[in-house]
Image (cartoon, rainbow, N blue to C red; front, side):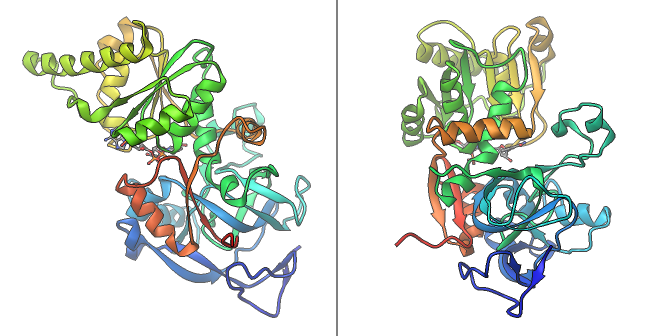
Length: 413
Ligand SMILES: NC(=O)c1ccc[n+]([C@@H]2O[C@H](COP(=O)([O-])OP(=O)(O)OC[C@H]3O[C@@H](n4cnc5c(N)ncnc54)[C@H](OP(=O)(O)O)[C@@H]3O)[C@@H](O)[C@H]2O)c1
């Protein structure tokens, strides 16, 4: 049950007595009237602490991870998250993002037995209705019609002093991780894990070559390590040598600098023989570079995609016969051209993938707890730098790996 305090607002890091919930909180808020680049989209505000419903948990947030989805939320594109929620009956005209974080369980709703007030937890980024008929019939909850991305489609994410989650979104925080480390890698790590291990028979097995776009990014840094852990051979794509070296240190066999090629974007029309010829030259040269790194003429069994429009034609061309291109995003655009001849003649699979189920989240957390997976925390900012962190990401100027902001956690002396 929620107890109300006389003091209705606490400053960041000024911890109320355990379990006592103030009326208001500091939050990094996006509002429709500010939609645009993250530097303008986010603003520090004071808002009401959300009420805890049945099956829900209120978490005192210590640190929050930065992810691309709240770049999209700030832009108001491709989804106006506030309008979409209001259409479904939500009353708030603002968005508190943040799809992962770490903190302390502060209040639990009716029926919650899996966590208790005072537990130190990490938060995963999707929720669903556990009573939904598809889930009751045995569906992976990530494929349920009721599934939604917390801190993006669902409100009251981790960019606030208190976050509101469903109980199953709470995972025990490994003691070997700092608050900031625990906050930064679950979204990208579990997404990459599902992409690489969740789509049998296309799972990474020992000796399998894997091509990883954006190898130095959040997803990429996790994917390189997971591929190595599974005995696969990761080859990264990056845009400069510093990022390439970062990938090598994580275990990539080598890296391809995409700026050495220019065949990006949509495919020429199939009737345009000259254009198609030129495109094939670029794609073949890219493939030769892949072979050179691998030291043999083998194609990637799995291509880990999230870049979308600019890269999909190359991914599908390069992917091995009967291999899989697995995609979880479209940073460069959504009109991804598929030359169907490569798809059916070579019996390739183009698989959509979205975040991860609870088991996959736990598997990634266990890898980090065992010291096998480095969360790759590359940047920690203060809470009021939440917009700045997303702006760096939007401009692709952010440091390699994953980023976090301290919310209630204090800066190390
Ligand atoms: N569906 C899901 O559950 C899910 C989960 C996580 C992320 N995502 C999506 O996946 C995407 C990446 O997320 P992230 O956290 O890994 O972001 P990130 O840390 O910014 O990494 C993305 C990488 O993409 C590369 N990139 C940027 N522009 C590119 C281009 N034109 N061509 C090729 N590569 C390019 C960059 O590497 P270089 O410039 O070095 O090549 C960058 O490091 C986002 O769109 C995000 O929304 C989806």
